[in-house]
Image (spheres, rainbow, N blue to C red):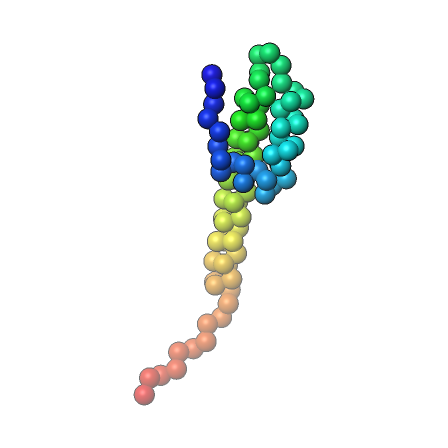
Length: 83
């Protein structure tokens, strides 16, 4: 079965230390008759894409919690009466 490439995975994987050159090298190194390099590349890019997604989701949760905590702990100035 031939898998379709994931272009967004290339950009995501490059951001998180998995360069296309490194992926090609790993795919060539570990490929065999039953598992061609293209399938290995697809798997590596898929793993990197999932890693990037999980990292971004974790970062978003952390930022949201930090912002919520900051807003609850920051004293608000009293409202001045309107003339």
